[in-house]
Length: 152
Image 1 (tube, rainbow, N blue to C red):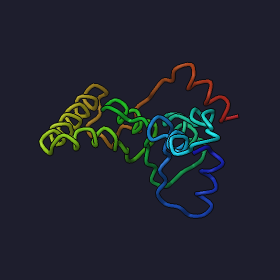
Image 2 (image 1 turned 90 degrees about the horizontal axis):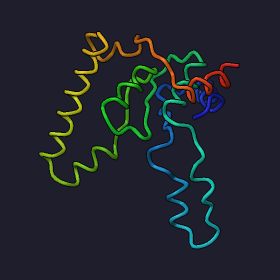
Image 3 (image 1 turned 135 degrees about the horizontal axis):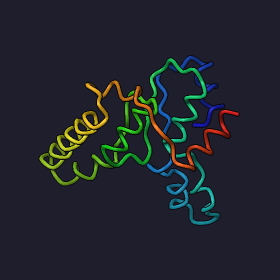
């Protein structure tokens, strides 16, 4: 979701917003697989990453619940999303891979993510994962340049 779409949602009083960045389910790709003719392959690469959608959301005073999703594949992705302002993180594909095996594999994967997140909270000196959005962060060149474009 770009900042303008986010503004539209806020004006219309949505209270929970799933930013759904690229990197997860690619609906353009799904539609191209369904089509026999007139495939629109060039649309498959359109979109903002989850990190960029979260950074874009920071340009607007949002007192709403933000959910980050799209391309989240590990504990560090979850943690970064929380640092950038998400309150919740969607990570469906990761869990589905384990759920398709058996229940014990899924439970072990969840326990492992919880353990890794506890390591990250310790590493960054916070007592609770809910404090992640208070962590000072630095952006790589691509994300930094993106923020310069959206903040101006």
